[in-house]
Image (cartoon, rainbow, N blue to C red; front, side, top):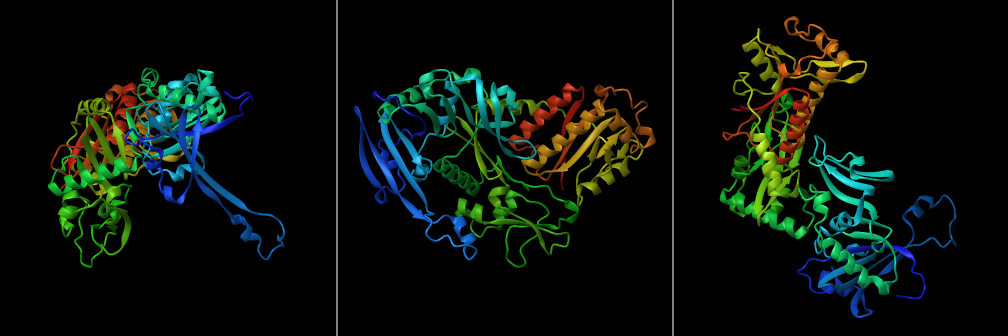
Length: 524
């Protein structure tokens, strides 16, 4: 320890992967950097420095010709450094300035920052968190609290939200005044550089603990795969499966909502005269390749799927194949999911928990014919026409009233047996999750809002109207039926995060007393 009181400052710390035995092997281009040996007591390290590049600030160009700024010293400089140390049998990288960019992508352990933080902070001392939601609209949000509090105060949904980073106050003062964790651990702590090896060993011990699993047992359920090397391995395995026909857990789905009345079809090639397909399908995409055996991750990211207008003349939308691809891989006892162009690691126990719940949702008893229509509206009209006395057509009949001017679609079809039928052609995870959210909103308003019931009654045929809009309806006599059109001959299979959102929706609806059903409509 130094005799002078150390200054409190933030340190950004990466724990490098176990396979990295020395600091230099984690540096992107060590030959272009200045290297210095560093001795901290008994621990030796290496400091890699990228000298500052001095240049005028970017905003200076705005004032050229407007006013004379000559003679004023206006310069900016960006410097970077990485200090690597081996402590407790592991190599650490402590970055300064823009030093993170000097590290090879994916060379660090992605669990270090978040796990160390969760093992170190008091449960009621969280000040900020970052999360990614897998609701109808995937959102990345950072929430700052005006004061420290428990994680429950942030409204985190432990099944629909991925916890990405946390800021809190450590229980043990020696761990710092405040720590923040994602990939890196950022610790605000009073110490000199000579204290660093001891401090790194403290953080390494915190990372190795498993206490966070008792306080935050859901944290490990889902995590993003941010390691570039791991993503490359998963992409390569996926391509190998596609080329060998191992596609039981792989399929294509349009990633965004479409107006199917203006969809003439899809093309997998920009070549003139390329085939136009009524929907996206993995088998058809593979068949469009000149040499499917040579399929590569680069091709998946480069090749596009174009959605054409009703006349098949002009492209309305275009996505990469990779964006449309859903895949599930199992390796080394873990489950990896590709959805929306991002890989996620999911624990097998969580996958089983969700799958078992979804498997227990019954199918509706409403008779629904096969789907051979141009769009959902045409299908709904035909279903109603086939049973005019038993089914009311509610598709696109929007319920509006002053308290909710944006309007709500009650359902697509409403039966005399009180089934609220929601019909949707198979889409990607976000669109299906939006469908489930719509069902929850409409059913909740029916149960809880008399003004909604009155507005709804004005749209319902007389035989279907509520007798008394001021009374809460007997929700146990109603059914919320989610019906999804799929061309696949196999049983209905939803993207994992859609299943998570369906489970959340079904539980909310069951809590209100509704019966929930899930049904596949066979597309032709």
